[in-house]
Length: 218
Image (cartoon, rainbow, N blue to C red):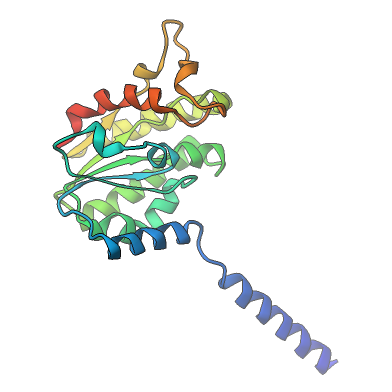
């Protein structure tokens, strides 16, 4: 019996070690950024774009804003909790003058978070960034209405409302509502601005986003 008990304890220990050895989601993405930074030092005092795939797929982002120093560090599929986890490595280390964030959509759709929980995740991230970078402008891009995620629109709208209300009360913050630019005369998202998955935008979508965001960039 002692042998069996010892074997079971050993098995549990091995399993625990194996589980703890699993990397946190998106660790490889962050390591890729760090390797890239070693090859090409990132600019200082930049406008840092981070968040989920809506940042990742914004091809040629700096070309949309000539004269601005832009750094893109999005990692697709990420949630606000992931951005918070990697905040030191994907935000703080760059000491940006402005942070432009798109995240929250995946929290609700794939992370199964409520609007309230998503809002609280944003608050947690904001407070951390503000403590570390008190002079950095914090800019949040509203959660977009993706046709393939129509069932989550109500939660998205509530999360946007809560986040906007919170940021409106804080200095040096911005809530950029890109939703109206994405809607047609019928009040529905314009199909042509999305890729075939009706989730990720194509270049036409970013051409609509760019001028809306322009006045907010420093």
